[in-house]
Amino acid sequence: MKAWKPALAAIVAALIVFFVPLPYFISYPGDATSTEDLIEVSGGDKEPGDLMMLTIAQRRATPYFLIESLFLPFSETSSVSDYLYDGESDAQYETRQKLYMEEAQHNATIEAYELADQKVDVDFEGIYVSGVIPGGPAEGKLKAGDRITSIDGKPITSFEGFMKTIQAKKAKTAVPIQFTRKSEDKKTTIRVDQLSKEVKRVGLGIYEPLPISNVTTDPDIAFQVEDVGGPSAGMMFTLEIYDQLTPGDLAKGHKIAGTGTIEEGGKVGPIGGAWQKVVAADEAEAEIMFVPAGENYKEAKPSIKKLGTNMKLVPIKTVEDAIDYLEELPAK
Image (spheres, rainbow, N blue to C red):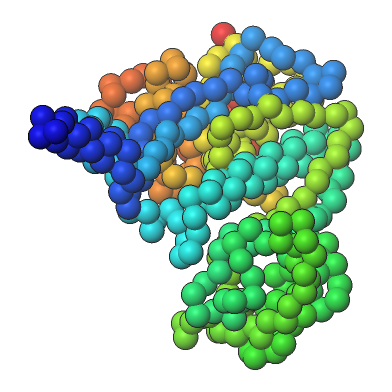
């Protein structure tokens, strides 16, 4: 019987080292993926040039992976609190990332179709609750994963309208809320209040409300994106959709990578891991990489130097900056 003890101890130790989660996430360079493989516009043209979205890979740390990350170039270890809101589970975090991706697809579709002068309609479906601020007005009333559909007895028709309605209230005002939880319609009343002494405007006390909408287009569009979350592909999605909607090869036969969110009016927003995405772009032999101007561009430049790559890093503020750059690019 005693002979089994060392073997059993070794098995338990191995299980702990490889499978016990630690309160950290590890990120490292991911992949460059051709966006034309992910997006299909009905009747759209797919050209020789390649537009590529970039990702970073991420995993929950275990003792083994934490030690391994010390020897991996371009890896980064971060506290779970940098990713998860208070009370948010790993599963809810994944749901939030999927919603970011859906929002990126919707925003990219709207922007590209408007730029190409094609028909696009948006049906707003509510506000997703990413998380509830501890001690805030919504604590005990709402939960992460709820979808708010109505305020003051009126349906929410836009994200901007939702924000204006809430912020127009005075502190301690009771606001009737309708929401959906696990397909069940519910009602509650929340007294909005200041969320901190530094911020005078009032709120419900929820983390990062996300718009949920359904977008319809003519011509039709279909996305085939799996196992990728977050909003950072929005700008490259916009370029791909615009390319398929308009004549010619936007990339002019070149391999173009890029990252950045897409926001209202075509603004390109900041993303995480720009310095790591340089590696993914370089490994895919991209000739040009678009990156949001400002801090993302600054953090990405040292990676270019460290890799010794000839890939050109191009900072942009709007998707039209990227389109203008590509239209001036000589054909390959």
